[in-house]
Image (cartoon, rainbow, N blue to C red; front, side, top):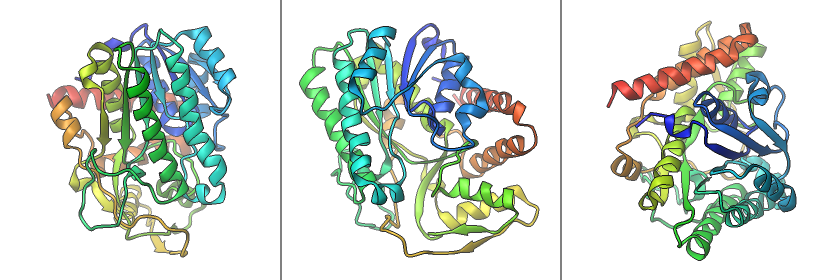
Length: 357
């Protein structure tokens, strides 16, 4: 189930490869022997995992905007990818309130452009659009876990634009890919944590910045519940979906990618676990700022990926936090060893998957 030999010598195109998840995905695929082509804006933060990992030297990296169809199509024409992962997005809820037009252009028209490139490129056999757990209509009903067949209607511009991205993908799948030439799926992932995320307005990066400044961690929404998982969890499911549907279109579909109920915790509990794992007297404080609307409760039903793929979560919340702390300590003490730390974490994750079969 966790064998990556399928990807050896495959040409894989990743949009959003300079982001947090994109850099980890590049690392996994390069180590598996794939030819990786990335198309993305420059890394969104400084520092950033893409640069720190040195992965740029091992892939074809094209800096471009997903809103620029002609430039992206030229990349597809030149490299003729077999598998495409669409991760490029404006991913921050608060930023979507500040720049709604840009958010919709990137997340909706960007998806149209990628799908149009896939439609016009015969080499592509497998396409996966990575969206979010926030695509669903959410009335904050307590303990409700969303299933894949529930209504899509995100509230804020980010969430709503991702709902639109899902619907665009559904339309393209029905309109242009019924002939079996290319399998098409979407993956609605829960909140990811892990080493190398430096984004603004995300809780683990806020924790890391507080550690660096030797300050208390400021927590905006300590009672908001989210489905937290280590970044390797969804990435390996993405890889599994893309592999399985490449060989058999019966695996096409719309999949929730989230942890078990035990890993759906509120933000305050997550930060407490980070403080305990870090030690050194690290603490946090509640600094609720009355910012724009964000859902108070969000949980995914992961039954479909379990039944279809036999998948089970590998690293639960405490181990995910500990791995994040391990990576952060390497970042703070020996930046030259970051690529090795990533390789070791990937190997450990794979070995765990093999032991648990």
